[in-house]
Each structure stands twice: as structure tokens, then as C-alpha cells.
Length: 520
Ligand code: NDP
Image (cartoon, rainbow, N blue to C red; front, side):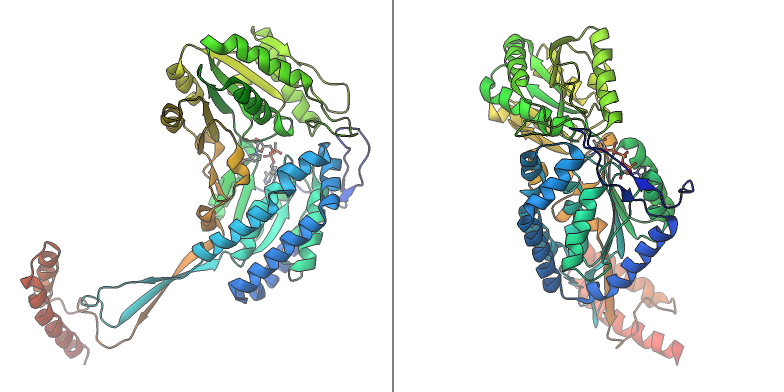
């Protein structure tokens, strides 16, 4: 699989999705620039890895501080290329940077600490071993456009703390936030330690075909499978976090006000362009009418960004995404779904009205495929059992939630959901809580972001084994009756024979003498 050739000196051109205003063009990396960026990162990595962990920690803290101090710069660039309001950019991406930094640091101290192995003295005299964590080398981080900063920093910090260099590849839809991030990194870290390549999927593929040592990919299932296959061919570690089609189960005994507010938020946050957005809600028939009525009323009140002032949600980030949303809604309505509110573009840029579809079925694309837009499909169910069965009837498995006042029952039901993150009375929130692994099952992919469990991608264990070299090992040549007796003594000892230890001591001496004699 070889990437198609790139046109030389191409540029990425795009517009603000809320206003349609043209944004400054960004040069696309040429193949030789991609190779050069990886080579420079590799050259910078050796010195960085040689620093004590505490020095790397200080640099990461400086990066966090620098980004937070420049919050207005960051939200301006993010808002410009996503069309979201600056408040939303701040709340969903910048505000959690400090927590991610702190967690990455404490996880690094734990995950990267060397581990001394306790070897049994009788069998392994004069030997010792330690398992230490060494950086992979150069880590490629390939990210989508929905959280142009957040999708990077959750992996950037642990990768750097582990002693790696990093090459960032943003989506062609949001190249400018990555430019800003790279500028901040350049002020804090050694030159070239954090590289940046720009362009579409062909540039991502070139990066993987280059000499990178690990890859963290966030994006669609289709591309994630390609990336995993390429990483498999190159035998490099690969962490993929892919799409979702999250379900929420609403039980008749829930706190209805809170549930309506919570589901409304997690369905429409970032205009639903969130891998863990609630896209399907299974509601018990007994409260379905009231739930739908109240949620529809809430959704109708929400303001979609026009590029001015405060808004509740932004537009779709790109035209392809808007087309998917329109198609899913149209198909659902044609198959009998009832539009409670929305169901059409706002008329401003790529804005789409918050949309609630009632009486949906599993057969509709709006229930089975990822929509990634401000659309929520309601499926009415007889009871919790039916809800769990239908929630699990999905190709994806990222977050799943149960909304109820009966916490014990909710917890038991949540554990039956086939997901990486199971919640009661909330949804997706742990995405900004880096203590917990963010991971999935099925087509959502097995990648792990956040927490100490993510470090496997960034550091490999190396065993260092030291033999004092005093005696030869008793199983070395020659094979003789004493070796056979030694084997039996070892097994008898494992089975609990106290006397076997004494036999073992005598046999070990005889074996060492026989081995030395043969070699003399
Ligand atoms: P894509 O898979 O299209 O793109 C993701 C990234 O991969 C982009 O930078 C893209 O570049 C790049 N890319 C495209 N083709 C290749 C290739 N052959 N080799 C290497 N890189 C390539 O995803 P979307 O942009 O559509 O992002 C939305 C998806 O991301 C949704 O499915 C969403 O659920 C998922 N997502 C998952 C998250 C999770 O934690 N599970 C979090 C956030 C999003 P370019 O865009 O320039 O083509």
C-alpha cells in the first residue's frame, strides 16, 4: 500500500464553518518534508530521552502553563476553524489541559518507574533483573477535526514524558490549531522534538510509511482499519480510537428534569461531533411522551452559532459532515421517524438545527450508523431488558449510560452494556477526566487514551538481566542422571515436598562440578 503522489507546493484552503469567511491558507507538507520532519524528530529524541524524568516533567508543566496563559489565542484559532463559540472551545478543550497535564505526570511516574524482579535465590543464585521502560522513539499522532487541540494533547503529553519525539498530523479541516500548538511546543521543548506535517490522508499515510516507531490514531473506523493494517505490516504499536454510536437508556423512574438536561447536553455538545455523543436513546414507554416533549422543548431553545456572540452549539465542521446528517435525517423520516424539532439547516454557514427524532427503529441509519451531528434518535422500549438488548445491537461500543433513580439497578444494567466506559446518570464526562482509560470495544477500536493504561503505546518494557557469572547454570551440558534427579527434585519441591529442597542443594553442587569438568 503506497500513498498516492502529492501535488507539490499545494496549500490547504478552508473557511469558517459558521460564517463562510476564508481562513489563511496553510502549506501542505511535501513527501520530502514529511521524511525530513521524522528525521529531525528522531535526532532530537535521543537527547530528550536522556534527560531525567523530572526535567521532562518540568517542560510539560511549562507547556501547560504557556497554553493556558494564551487562552484567547487558542480559542480564537479553534473557533475560527471549527465555527464553535469561544466559550465552548475553552470549556471542552482548554479548561481540562491542566488536569490532563497533572494526570499524565502522575501516571508517568507510576508507569515509567523501573521494576526490580525478585528472583528465587536457590534456583537463580548470583542473578538479578530489572524491567525498565524505554521510549518507543518517534510517535506519530494522527487526529481528526472535532477537537483540534484536545485530540492532540491527551497523547502528546504522555508521549513526551515517556521520552519520545512526536510528529503531529492534524486533519486537513483543522490545520491551524495544530500550527498554534506546534508554536507553543517549540518555545518549551528542544528544537524539532515536536514535528508537524500538514495535508490530507495521503500525508497521514506517508507519515506511517516513514520511520515512525508508534502511532496513535483517532478518527473513523474506515481509516482506523487502514492505519492498523499499515502499523501491523511495519510491526509498530498502534492505538486506535474510532467512531461511536453511543446509547443512553432512560428508565421510567429517572429524575426527568435532570435526565432531559443531561441527555440534551451530551447529544448536542460540540453539535454532536463527539465520538461519545449520545446518538440513540432508549426510553421506557411509560415516560416516553413526557420525555420527548420536554427534550424537544429544550432543543428548540438552543442557539446555533452564527459566528457572533454566545451560542449553545456550533455548526457542522465541514460540508461532508453536513451531508451525512441530512441523509440520516431524511432516511429516518422516510422510514417513519417523527421529527419533534429541527430536521433542517439553520441557513447560516454549515449550521444544522438541533434535531430530535421520535419513534425510530434499529433498522434506520440514524440508529445504526454514526451520524456525528446534532441529531438524537429516540427508540421507545417496553422495559430495561429490551433497552439493553437494543443498545448492545451496535457495531460500536464507546460509552453507554443508564438514567435512573435506582442506582444499584442502574449500575448492574450499565455493566451489561458492551462499551469501554459504562455510566449511570451521566455520559461522556470521563473524556475530560484523565485518571480513567478512554477506550472502546468492537468497531470503536481497542486503543486506550488517558491513565496509566495508555503508556504501553509510548514506552516498551526492556528487561535487563545481570548474572554475576559465579557458577554455570545447573541445566547446561552434560545431560546426566543428576540432571534428571534435579528435574524431579524441582517438581517435588513445587508439589510441597520439604525434603526435595535438601536433595536439590546436593544435586546443584554435583551438577556445577560436572559442567565445569566437561568444559575444562
Ligand atoms: P478520518 O478517519 O477521516 O480522519 C482522521 C485523521 O486521519 C485525519 O487527520 C485524516 O486526515 C487522517 N487520515 C485520513 N486517511 C488516512 C490514511 N490513509 N492514513 C493516515 N491518516 C489518514 O476521521 P474524521 O476526520 O472523519 O473524524 C471523525 C471520526 O473520528 C468519527 O468517526 C469520530 O467518532 C472519531 N473520533 C473518535 C474519538 C475517540 O476517542 N474514539 C474521538 C474523536 C473522534 P484528513 O482529515 O486530512 O483527511
